[in-house]
Length: 591
Image: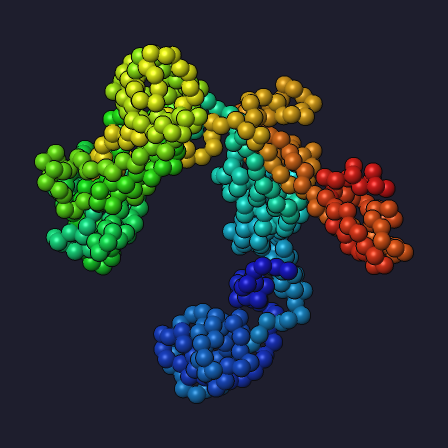
């Protein structure tokens, strides 16, 4: 069907030269006409039987006049101006002989030009032929040759629609989106991706993250909600320190409303001051100024003397409400690190803390709870203690000692006189129950009683001890050393490397690898295919008693069969079992 809306064959009569019309006219009708001198407009009684191309004939009209256009039901336009003025006089309208062989030839010729892919049709619809929705079937292949010659022609999607995605494929070449588009077009299937580099061990690849926070109370200047600090740059009004707020948390410490700001990109050192941030909350209004007042908080615990005898997890209370826990100790129980659990804030500082620049708060150190066992040799009022494990004591430390074999001798405090090594020390000891001039060896227990000497650091900025943000850089059963795949036939083909990727689909790599390599494969990388088939097959059985299905089950399928569970059935009929090839070997073992 021709795409031309206005066909030349309908209007060719008005375009035929005048000399061709000579001698080929018949009277059609007589109409009363009225004219105005030197005008091309003619008024007639009725234009129903008048068409463009009719010749107007009247005795007073000496020149040759044809109707060129029908203007209304009573008016027509003619080819030449009529000189005379007429009023309601009869005139003849003569039409060309419709039986003229030459005219029929011209009409047929115009129709021939207007056929699909004819000269006139092609010229008049050249723009539409450039649109894949309207172009001819013969030109579809030419589109592929010109713009997508590497694309296979056996695509399952509509070729006219796919032509529109040529640019998308080339623009996204080397990306997952290009692969997915290609798989949809070629196989009407999905493609998923896995990158072995995510499972390759890389030295120092782990990301160690430290949270940095400050605590504030709502300010008095300006307006704005403290939650509006999120994703906003803040500036200290005194220190001029700056940072970007990542997260805002609202806390209540007693009756005090506190906001904890998690900071990134910190520059400078915040002090006890007002902080200000500016944020555009509404596009139709001016930026809002947000203010708050920083307050000191328990930032960390410094260990002056960790002493010995502590256990991990022991709670340490700080005056003002701060709570900490012992995070690690050495072999003797000496505190190595303390973790702040509840940092608390100190909006009103003690005079001592104020004098020290809000850098200290009293700590109520707990008494050690551990006991160590060993042997003691007593002679001349001096004891030599040898423990099984490191004792952790230093000169001047004190502890309690008691003898389980001598319950009548009460537990007594001792002070370390000399440290001989990590498991031995001496101390002064005398008791009426033991003769000092006789050497005696006894089993003894040391109970640690000296509390640790800890220092609570109050500061504006609190920094966490840190944590691993992910599992990168850690070797496990899911992380491999750089090298070929475990079951790779070609050991020179590296699977676990930074420049390989896996396309997982239900289409074999043999069906798409060549096309993908030409169209979407990123240069310098290695591609692997993972077949993911999940199809259903049907089977019927009627066991007579309780038995495993596979004892009676027969598999018939014209496609790949791939995970089926072994289930017990009793007097039941089984159909449409989903079977997967991952367990094909097991299935046939049952059979």
